[in-house]
Image (cartoon, rainbow, N blue to C red; front, top):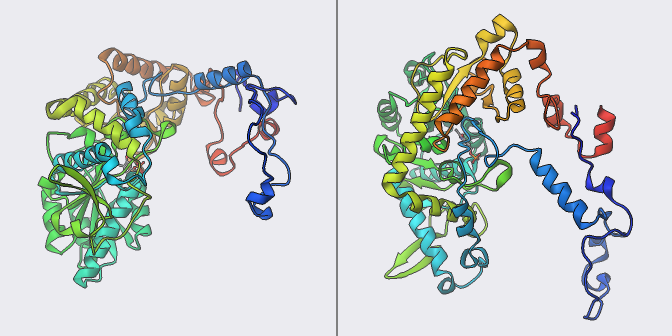
Length: 488
Ligand SMILES: *Cc1c(COP(=O)(O)O)cnc(C)c1O
């Protein structure tokens, strides 16, 4: 349903003959399109593009931009997504012509600067994870999961071992079981206890010689560090299986502890989360993976190597699983991550994580009286509060609070995930935020819980779009103004 701040679509503003720019007269011979393309590849009439003036187009997009919430305009505690501030310095680095204007088919000797950067990124990722080999190719975290599982599959095939299962804890991100299925494995759910940790008895009952990989998110999506991590790794290793670490929560442990030191055999990074790349609507991600030595021969090619003072692409990995992405992956994201890592340095990265954990604990301590956190009084970089009591006492749901927060100028936390917590509200403030912002957020949360439930059910009231039917919006997205008007 629409609120009052309507903006017309460009096609509604369109009037025949209006132009935002005029092209100079053509000064080369005109060619008939039919000479260039087969007729079945050409349209019979020009596309119906909006015809508008420059002020119309500028106002349209500037107005649209103010209808959105973004990290640049609002506090954005979307748990699991690490919506930290994206330093503008990173953007400047990525836009430098020496990076932005390269063509991936250029000869290696002309892209030494980019190759040096990618080589150093391999080294940084290896150092931060404690895992000795790296591929930068995957295009997102989920793609990194899939790539690593394919690497594991190639490794087991080589060993002549027939393993068909991947273990995934029940509070994992949905991409984990999905990646396991895409890699041809059967995903087996491992229960977690009411404390939010892996249920060791359930793990023991499901761990057998058919398990190829156990995927684990540590710190978990509940923002808890798994206390049995070593034991879990030892048990999986004892049955010949591998540990995959979902590295989406690296923001909690940078420079403090390394997954490779507690038994991870493979992991991905989300540079767009941990290393401040703009993501969500803001840009593509990347999903580099690191692995232990014995899995290195199976990584996608090319890998960047350094020989004397020259950088070169190594395609010579006879056991490689092959490419998973064109060229070298989403290198623009990696340039931004490089700028971030170099800006902070090793001590600075540790401080990032310390502050992310401090901020999350501060916010937890401020909100737990109104929104209890079932899994305790301490957290890592995020925590999952529950609106279950409020729902029972006052009929106020996590969704009501999330929507009402928009009226107060805060982006909502992640809601209804993980599924193991009823009326879940997953808050990840990140290290970017000041104490004043966290205080203001906590105060608004308190104020909302004191409001009339009826007012909350219809929230938000001040945004361009009020409360859509979530299921219908996902299944039948309305793409035209006419259809939207009709739907209302
Ligand atoms: C974000 C996230 C992923 C997936 O990463 P993408 O880069 O979005 O593909 C996987 N696991 C967890 C825990 C995440 O938060």
